[in-house]
Image 1 (cartoon, rainbow, N blue to C red):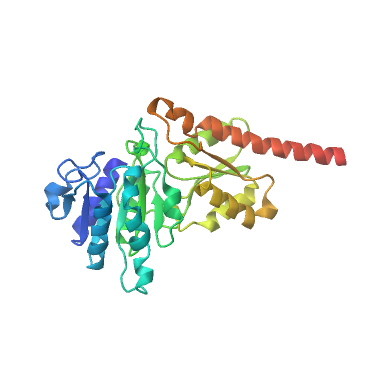
Image 2 (image 1 turned 45 degrees about the vertical axis):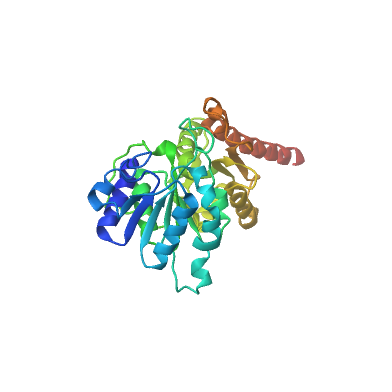
Length: 331
Protein backbone atom coordinates (compact mmCIF):
# COMPACT_ATOMS: atom_id res chain seq x y z
CA UNK A 1 0.00 0.00 0.00
CA UNK A 2 2.82 2.42 0.78
CA UNK A 3 4.26 1.88 -2.70
CA UNK A 4 0.83 2.38 -4.28
CA UNK A 5 0.40 5.72 -2.48
CA UNK A 6 3.88 6.79 -3.56
CA UNK A 7 3.09 5.83 -7.15
CA UNK A 8 -0.19 7.76 -7.04
CA UNK A 9 1.59 10.92 -5.91
CA UNK A 10 4.33 10.51 -8.52
CA UNK A 11 1.84 9.87 -11.35
CA UNK A 12 -0.30 12.85 -10.31
CA UNK A 13 2.74 15.15 -10.22
CA UNK A 14 3.90 13.95 -13.62
CA UNK A 15 0.45 14.44 -15.13
CA UNK A 16 -0.26 17.87 -13.66
CA UNK A 17 2.40 20.49 -12.87
CA UNK A 18 -0.02 22.28 -10.52
CA UNK A 19 0.19 19.37 -8.03
CA UNK A 20 2.51 20.25 -5.15
CA UNK A 21 3.35 18.02 -2.19
CA UNK A 22 4.50 19.44 1.12
CA UNK A 23 4.55 18.74 4.84
CA UNK A 24 6.89 17.82 7.65
CA UNK A 25 9.85 15.70 6.47
CA UNK A 26 8.23 14.78 3.14
CA UNK A 27 11.17 16.01 1.07
CA UNK A 28 14.66 14.69 1.70
CA UNK A 29 13.51 12.05 4.20
CA UNK A 30 10.57 10.94 2.07
CA UNK A 31 8.12 11.07 4.97
CA UNK A 32 8.09 9.14 8.24
CA UNK A 33 6.51 6.19 6.42
CA UNK A 34 8.42 6.88 3.17
CA UNK A 35 5.23 7.58 1.25
CA UNK A 36 6.87 10.56 -0.49
CA UNK A 37 10.20 8.82 -1.05
CA UNK A 38 12.00 10.05 -4.17
CA UNK A 39 9.55 12.82 -5.06
CA UNK A 40 11.85 15.70 -4.08
CA UNK A 41 14.68 14.19 -6.13
CA UNK A 42 12.49 13.87 -9.21
CA UNK A 43 10.44 17.07 -9.02
CA UNK A 44 12.64 19.39 -7.01
CA UNK A 45 12.11 21.09 -3.70
CA UNK A 46 9.70 23.63 -5.17
CA UNK A 47 7.15 20.86 -5.81
CA UNK A 48 7.93 18.50 -2.92
CA UNK A 49 8.91 20.65 0.02
CA UNK A 50 9.63 20.24 3.70
CA UNK A 51 7.82 22.66 5.99
CA UNK A 52 8.31 23.97 9.51
CA UNK A 53 6.57 22.12 12.34
CA UNK A 54 3.48 24.32 12.11
CA UNK A 55 0.37 22.51 10.95
CA UNK A 56 -1.84 25.61 10.93
CA UNK A 57 0.74 27.32 8.72
CA UNK A 58 0.95 24.28 6.43
CA UNK A 59 -2.79 24.16 5.84
CA UNK A 60 -3.14 27.94 5.63
CA UNK A 61 -0.48 27.95 2.93
CA UNK A 62 -2.40 25.24 1.08
CA UNK A 63 -5.52 27.44 1.10
CA UNK A 64 -3.60 30.29 -0.51
CA UNK A 65 -2.06 27.98 -3.10
CA UNK A 66 -5.47 26.54 -4.00
CA UNK A 67 -6.90 30.05 -4.40
CA UNK A 68 -4.17 30.75 -6.97
CA UNK A 69 -4.91 27.64 -9.04
CA UNK A 70 -2.56 25.04 -7.59
CA UNK A 71 -3.45 21.58 -6.27
CA UNK A 72 -1.65 21.16 -2.96
CA UNK A 73 -1.31 17.74 -1.36
CA UNK A 74 -0.58 18.18 2.33
CA UNK A 75 0.75 15.48 4.64
CA UNK A 76 -0.11 15.64 8.33
CA UNK A 77 2.64 13.44 9.72
CA UNK A 78 0.41 11.70 12.26
CA UNK A 79 -3.33 11.84 12.92
CA UNK A 80 -3.28 13.92 16.11
CA UNK A 81 -0.69 16.29 14.64
CA UNK A 82 -3.48 17.69 12.47
CA UNK A 83 -5.39 19.18 15.41
CA UNK A 84 -3.47 22.50 15.49
CA UNK A 85 -4.68 23.06 11.90
CA UNK A 86 -8.33 22.41 12.74
CA UNK A 87 -9.33 26.08 12.68
CA UNK A 88 -7.95 26.46 9.16
CA UNK A 89 -9.75 23.30 8.12
CA UNK A 90 -13.17 24.23 9.48
CA UNK A 91 -13.19 27.96 8.80
CA UNK A 92 -11.43 28.12 5.43
CA UNK A 93 -10.80 24.79 3.70
CA UNK A 94 -14.33 23.48 4.21
CA UNK A 95 -16.19 26.76 3.64
CA UNK A 96 -14.31 28.67 0.94
CA UNK A 97 -16.11 27.22 -2.05
CA UNK A 98 -19.51 27.87 -0.47
CA UNK A 99 -18.46 31.30 0.77
CA UNK A 100 -17.51 32.36 -2.78
CA UNK A 101 -20.58 30.79 -4.44
CA UNK A 102 -18.37 28.27 -6.18
CA UNK A 103 -15.91 30.77 -7.61
CA UNK A 104 -12.99 29.54 -5.49
CA UNK A 105 -12.75 25.74 -5.41
CA UNK A 106 -10.47 24.16 -2.83
CA UNK A 107 -8.64 21.30 -4.60
CA UNK A 108 -6.68 20.39 -1.48
CA UNK A 109 -5.88 16.80 -0.51
CA UNK A 110 -4.97 16.39 3.15
CA UNK A 111 -3.23 13.08 3.75
CA UNK A 112 -3.62 11.87 7.34
CA UNK A 113 -1.90 8.65 8.49
CA UNK A 114 -4.39 7.52 11.11
CA UNK A 115 -5.30 4.78 13.56
CA UNK A 116 -3.37 2.42 15.78
CA UNK A 117 -1.90 -1.02 15.61
CA UNK A 118 1.74 0.04 15.13
CA UNK A 119 2.73 0.55 18.77
CA UNK A 120 2.64 4.32 18.56
CA UNK A 121 2.48 6.52 21.62
CA UNK A 122 -0.03 9.26 22.44
CA UNK A 123 -0.71 11.71 19.55
CA UNK A 124 0.41 9.04 17.06
CA UNK A 125 -2.55 6.66 16.97
CA UNK A 126 -5.81 8.61 16.88
CA UNK A 127 -8.82 7.75 14.73
CA UNK A 128 -10.14 11.25 14.20
CA UNK A 129 -12.55 10.72 11.32
CA UNK A 130 -15.64 11.86 13.27
CA UNK A 131 -14.27 15.42 13.46
CA UNK A 132 -13.97 15.56 9.69
CA UNK A 133 -17.24 13.93 8.68
CA UNK A 134 -19.10 16.37 10.93
CA UNK A 135 -17.70 19.30 8.92
CA UNK A 136 -19.80 20.10 5.82
CA UNK A 137 -17.71 20.90 2.77
CA UNK A 138 -15.18 18.11 3.19
CA UNK A 139 -14.96 14.76 1.45
CA UNK A 140 -13.57 12.01 3.71
CA UNK A 141 -12.18 8.75 2.34
CA UNK A 142 -10.14 5.84 3.66
CA UNK A 143 -8.48 3.07 1.67
CA UNK A 144 -8.33 -0.53 2.84
CA UNK A 145 -6.75 -2.12 -0.24
CA UNK A 146 -3.72 -1.44 -2.39
CA UNK A 147 -5.89 -0.68 -5.43
CA UNK A 148 -8.00 1.81 -3.50
CA UNK A 149 -4.91 3.47 -2.04
CA UNK A 150 -3.79 4.35 -5.55
CA UNK A 151 -7.18 4.99 -7.14
CA UNK A 152 -8.75 7.00 -4.34
CA UNK A 153 -5.65 9.17 -3.94
CA UNK A 154 -5.60 9.97 -7.66
CA UNK A 155 -9.30 10.84 -7.52
CA UNK A 156 -8.79 12.96 -4.42
CA UNK A 157 -6.03 15.00 -6.01
CA UNK A 158 -8.18 15.54 -9.12
CA UNK A 159 -11.20 16.68 -7.07
CA UNK A 160 -12.07 20.38 -6.88
CA UNK A 161 -13.41 19.80 -3.38
CA UNK A 162 -11.13 19.34 -0.37
CA UNK A 163 -10.55 15.72 0.56
CA UNK A 164 -9.41 14.29 3.88
CA UNK A 165 -7.49 11.20 2.78
CA UNK A 166 -7.20 8.87 5.77
CA UNK A 167 -4.37 6.35 5.43
CA UNK A 168 -4.57 3.39 7.85
CA UNK A 169 -1.03 3.12 9.15
CA UNK A 170 -1.15 -0.56 10.02
CA UNK A 171 -2.09 -1.41 6.43
CA UNK A 172 0.85 0.44 4.85
CA UNK A 173 2.78 -2.83 4.51
CA UNK A 174 -0.05 -5.01 3.20
CA UNK A 175 0.67 -6.63 -0.15
CA UNK A 176 -1.56 -7.70 -3.02
CA UNK A 177 -1.38 -8.04 -6.78
CA UNK A 178 -2.26 -4.75 -8.40
CA UNK A 179 -1.87 -2.71 -11.57
CA UNK A 180 -2.09 1.11 -11.58
CA UNK A 181 -4.45 1.07 -14.55
CA UNK A 182 -6.94 -1.20 -12.76
CA UNK A 183 -10.24 0.69 -12.34
CA UNK A 184 -11.62 1.42 -8.87
CA UNK A 185 -14.96 2.77 -7.74
CA UNK A 186 -15.10 6.59 -7.47
CA UNK A 187 -15.30 8.61 -4.28
CA UNK A 188 -18.76 8.18 -2.81
CA UNK A 189 -19.15 4.50 -3.66
CA UNK A 190 -18.88 1.59 -1.23
CA UNK A 191 -17.76 -1.89 -2.26
CA UNK A 192 -19.15 -5.25 -1.13
CA UNK A 193 -15.96 -7.14 -0.27
CA UNK A 194 -17.86 -10.29 0.68
CA UNK A 195 -21.49 -11.20 -0.02
CA UNK A 196 -23.72 -12.77 2.59
CA UNK A 197 -27.35 -13.04 3.61
CA UNK A 198 -27.44 -13.33 7.43
CA UNK A 199 -25.45 -10.35 8.78
CA UNK A 200 -23.86 -7.28 7.21
CA UNK A 201 -20.60 -5.89 8.61
CA UNK A 202 -20.26 -2.22 7.64
CA UNK A 203 -16.71 -0.96 8.02
CA UNK A 204 -13.81 0.96 6.47
CA UNK A 205 -10.06 1.45 6.69
CA UNK A 206 -8.02 -0.74 9.01
CA UNK A 207 -11.00 -2.76 10.27
CA UNK A 208 -11.85 -4.12 6.81
CA UNK A 209 -9.32 -7.00 7.12
CA UNK A 210 -10.60 -7.66 10.66
CA UNK A 211 -14.17 -7.99 9.38
CA UNK A 212 -13.09 -10.16 6.46
CA UNK A 213 -11.37 -12.56 8.85
CA UNK A 214 -14.36 -12.57 11.20
CA UNK A 215 -16.72 -13.30 8.30
CA UNK A 216 -14.58 -16.25 7.22
CA UNK A 217 -14.54 -17.64 10.76
CA UNK A 218 -18.29 -17.13 11.11
CA UNK A 219 -18.89 -19.17 7.99
CA UNK A 220 -17.65 -22.27 9.82
CA UNK A 221 -20.58 -21.81 12.24
CA UNK A 222 -23.10 -21.45 9.46
CA UNK A 223 -23.21 -17.64 9.42
CA UNK A 224 -23.36 -16.14 5.94
CA UNK A 225 -21.76 -12.74 6.59
CA UNK A 226 -21.45 -9.83 4.18
CA UNK A 227 -18.69 -7.21 4.46
CA UNK A 228 -19.13 -3.71 3.07
CA UNK A 229 -16.07 -1.49 2.74
CA UNK A 230 -17.42 2.06 2.79
CA UNK A 231 -14.22 3.56 1.29
CA UNK A 232 -15.93 6.96 1.39
CA UNK A 233 -17.42 8.29 4.62
CA UNK A 234 -18.48 11.54 2.96
CA UNK A 235 -20.19 11.17 0.53
CA UNK A 236 -21.85 8.13 2.16
CA UNK A 237 -23.10 5.40 -0.15
CA UNK A 238 -26.56 4.83 1.30
CA UNK A 239 -27.76 2.76 -1.66
CA UNK A 240 -25.19 -0.02 -1.28
CA UNK A 241 -25.47 -0.18 2.51
CA UNK A 242 -29.27 -0.14 2.68
CA UNK A 243 -29.65 -2.75 -0.06
CA UNK A 244 -27.37 -5.18 1.80
CA UNK A 245 -29.02 -4.56 5.18
CA UNK A 246 -32.51 -5.01 3.76
CA UNK A 247 -31.51 -8.40 2.38
CA UNK A 248 -29.88 -9.60 5.60
CA UNK A 249 -32.02 -7.88 8.23
CA UNK A 250 -29.07 -7.54 10.59
CA UNK A 251 -26.11 -5.17 10.68
CA UNK A 252 -22.98 -4.49 12.70
CA UNK A 253 -20.95 -1.32 12.22
CA UNK A 254 -17.25 -1.75 12.97
CA UNK A 255 -14.59 0.93 13.38
CA UNK A 256 -11.49 1.57 15.44
CA UNK A 257 -12.41 5.02 16.78
CA UNK A 258 -14.21 5.45 20.09
CA UNK A 259 -17.88 4.56 20.01
CA UNK A 260 -19.59 7.56 21.59
CA UNK A 261 -20.70 9.98 18.83
CA UNK A 262 -18.46 8.16 16.38
CA UNK A 263 -19.07 7.58 12.69
CA UNK A 264 -20.71 4.27 13.56
CA UNK A 265 -23.41 6.04 15.53
CA UNK A 266 -24.45 8.03 12.46
CA UNK A 267 -24.39 4.96 10.23
CA UNK A 268 -26.42 2.93 12.73
CA UNK A 269 -28.97 5.74 13.01
CA UNK A 270 -29.34 6.00 9.24
CA UNK A 271 -29.77 2.25 8.90
CA UNK A 272 -32.39 2.23 11.67
CA UNK A 273 -34.31 5.11 10.10
CA UNK A 274 -34.23 3.84 6.52
CA UNK A 275 -34.31 0.06 6.97
CA UNK A 276 -36.51 -0.21 10.07
CA UNK A 277 -39.12 -2.57 8.61
CA UNK A 278 -36.40 -4.89 7.32
CA UNK A 279 -34.42 -5.21 10.55
CA UNK A 280 -34.67 -8.43 12.52
CA UNK A 281 -32.54 -7.08 15.39
CA UNK A 282 -31.03 -3.79 16.58
CA UNK A 283 -28.01 -2.43 14.73
CA UNK A 284 -24.90 -3.15 16.81
CA UNK A 285 -21.55 -1.38 16.92
CA UNK A 286 -18.06 -2.73 17.57
CA UNK A 287 -15.66 0.12 18.23
CA UNK A 288 -12.69 1.26 20.23
CA UNK A 289 -13.37 2.07 23.86
CA UNK A 290 -14.27 5.54 25.08
CA UNK A 291 -10.85 6.22 26.59
CA UNK A 292 -7.76 8.13 25.48
CA UNK A 293 -5.65 5.96 23.22
CA UNK A 294 -3.80 3.49 25.46
CA UNK A 295 -0.04 2.85 25.69
CA UNK A 296 1.47 0.51 23.08
CA UNK A 297 1.46 -2.55 25.33
CA UNK A 298 -2.30 -2.20 25.87
CA UNK A 299 -3.53 -1.19 22.43
CA UNK A 300 -4.43 -4.76 21.47
CA UNK A 301 -7.18 -4.62 24.11
CA UNK A 302 -8.51 -1.35 22.69
CA UNK A 303 -8.61 -2.23 19.01
CA UNK A 304 -11.66 -4.16 17.73
CA UNK A 305 -10.57 -7.68 16.87
CA UNK A 306 -12.22 -10.68 15.31
CA UNK A 307 -13.38 -11.97 18.69
CA UNK A 308 -15.43 -8.82 19.39
CA UNK A 309 -16.88 -8.83 15.89
CA UNK A 310 -17.84 -12.50 16.20
CA UNK A 311 -19.42 -11.76 19.57
CA UNK A 312 -21.62 -9.09 17.96
CA UNK A 313 -22.66 -11.55 15.24
CA UNK A 314 -23.58 -14.07 17.94
CA UNK A 315 -25.61 -11.47 19.83
CA UNK A 316 -27.66 -10.84 16.70
CA UNK A 317 -28.20 -14.57 16.33
CA UNK A 318 -29.34 -14.83 19.97
CA UNK A 319 -31.93 -12.13 19.29
CA UNK A 320 -33.16 -14.16 16.32
CA UNK A 321 -33.29 -17.36 18.39
CA UNK A 322 -35.28 -15.60 21.12
CA UNK A 323 -37.74 -14.26 18.57
CA UNK A 324 -38.28 -17.70 17.06
CA UNK A 325 -38.77 -19.19 20.54
CA UNK A 326 -41.30 -16.47 21.39
CA UNK A 327 -43.29 -17.16 18.23
CA UNK A 328 -43.22 -20.88 18.96
CA UNK A 329 -44.57 -20.34 22.49
CA UNK A 330 -47.21 -17.93 21.23
CA UNK A 331 -48.35 -20.45 18.62
